Image 1 (cartoon, one colour):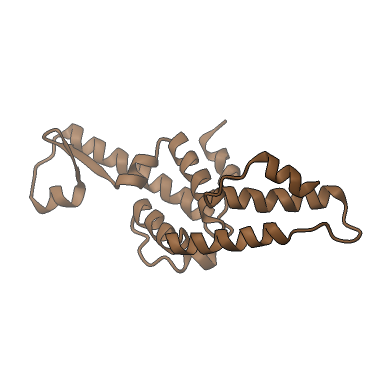
Image 2 (cartoon, helix red, strand yellow):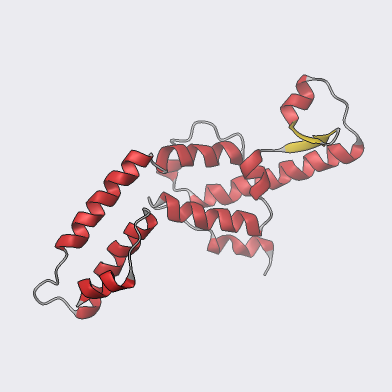
Length: 173
C-alpha cells in the first residue's frame, strides 16, 4: 500500500480519548513516527539525545550526520502532525493553542480528554449503576439487549473494572 493512500485508516477522534489514543499510537508506531511524538524532535550529540532548541541555545556545531538526523526527525514530526490533523475534527482542533509539533498536539489532547483518576472513578461508578439496573426493554430484540450489555461491560473494563464472563452472561440471561 502506498504511504499516501493510508490516510483512510486514520482513526477519528469522536470523544472516546482512551480508545482513540491507543489506535492513534499504534498507527504512529507502525509508521515509525511515535518517537518524535513521544519525545519531540531530538538530535544525538556526544552520545545523548537532546532537543534541537538546547543544541541551538548552547551554540553546538552539528556534524553533517547530526544535521541529516535532525532533518529526518523534523520530517517525521511533520508527517505525524499531518496524521493528527486528519484525526482531529475542526472544533476540537481549534482548541489546541500550540500546534508547533506533534508532541504539543498529542500532549494537549491528552491533557484535555484523558481525564483524571477521580473522573474515571466517577465514570466507572456510573457505569456500574447502569449495569446493575440494566433490563431488557419491552419489545427489544435479544441482539439489541445483548449489544447494550456488552457495550456497558466493555466500557467498565476500559475503566479498570474486572468483569468476569460469568457476570456478563448472568446479566444477559
